[in-house]
Image (cartoon, rainbow, N blue to C red; front, side):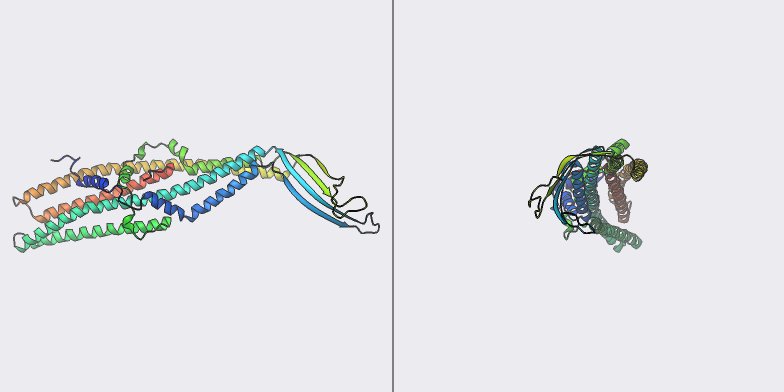
Length: 426
C-alpha cells in the first residue's frame, strides 16, 4: 500500500502548478488591494478626519501664537451736556499672547492622542480592505485548484462511463450499471458547475465589499505560493497578550481614553498667564492729536487670570470624568470580547485541522481503492461502474477538503484581523 504522504495526487498537482504559475496573474493581491483602497470612500473620508485632527493638534501645540485684532471706533456724543470734544475716533490694534496655563500640557497631550487615534483608524480601514481582498482571492485560488484536481477525475470518470456503456451495450454488463454510472457522472458535473459559479459569486462579493471590479477575472488571482503559506499559518500559537498589544481597535480606544482623561483634566484651567498689548491710533486728527499718532492710552503688560469659583466649569469637569469612567468599562469589555473571539477562532481552527487530517487519510484510502479496482478489472472481479462510484466519492472528498480549507482561510484571516497584522506582499 502506498504511503499517505504520496497518494494524494492533488497535493503534487498543487505543488507543480505553484512552481509553474508562481507569477501567472497580471493582477495580483497587491494590485487588487491598491485599486480597492483607492476607490474606498470611507478610507478617503478618514484621511480627511486625520487632517482635521492634525489642525486641532497644531492649535494646542502652538497655543502661544499671538492673536491680533484691529478695531475702529468713531463716536458722536449726544445728551444734555455735550462733552468736549463732541466727537472722537480711534483705531485699536490688540495683541493677546498666551504664555502659559495650567491646562496647556493636558490639552497638547489630549490633541496628540486624538491625532494618533485618527491615524490608527485610517490604518485599520486600510488593513480591513487588505484582509477582505486577501480572503476572497485566497478562496478563489483554492477553489481553482479544486477545479484543476477534478479535471483529472472528470476525464477518468468519462473514460470509465464510456467503457461501462460499451460493456452494457454488448451485453457483458447490465443496463442498470450504465444508468448508475451516468447518474454519478451527472451528479459530478452538477457539483463542478456549482463550484465554478461560486467563483463568480466571490468576485461579485469582492466588488460589493470593496468596490473593486474587473472585466477579466481570469487575470486576477493570488500567487499560489502565498496560498500555500497562508494555509500553513498556525493561529493556535497566538496569545491573548499578542491580540491586546497589537489590535488596532483596542489601541485606538485606549488612545481615545487618554484623550478623554486629559480633556477632563484640562476642562477647568485654573491659571492662565498672557501677554497683552493695545495700541491706539488717532484716525482723523484733532486739536490734541495728529492723524496716525499713538495715543497715551496704549499699553503693554501681563495678564494673569485665576479661576476661583465656577459651578458650571466644575460640573462640566465632573461630567467629563464620568464619561471617561464609562469608556473605561467599554474598553475592558472590548478586551474580553477580543479574547473570546480569539479562543473561538483557535478552537474552530484546531477542530478543522483534525477533521482535515482524518479526511486526508480517507482520500489516501480512496485512491488506493481506485488503484486496486483498476487491477481487479483485469480479472473481471468488478464492473466499471464500481470505479466510477469510487472516483465520484474521491471528488466528494475533495469537495469536503475544499470546504475545510475555505473555513481555515476564514479563521486565519479573521485572526489576522484580530491581531491587526498583514500577511505577505507579492
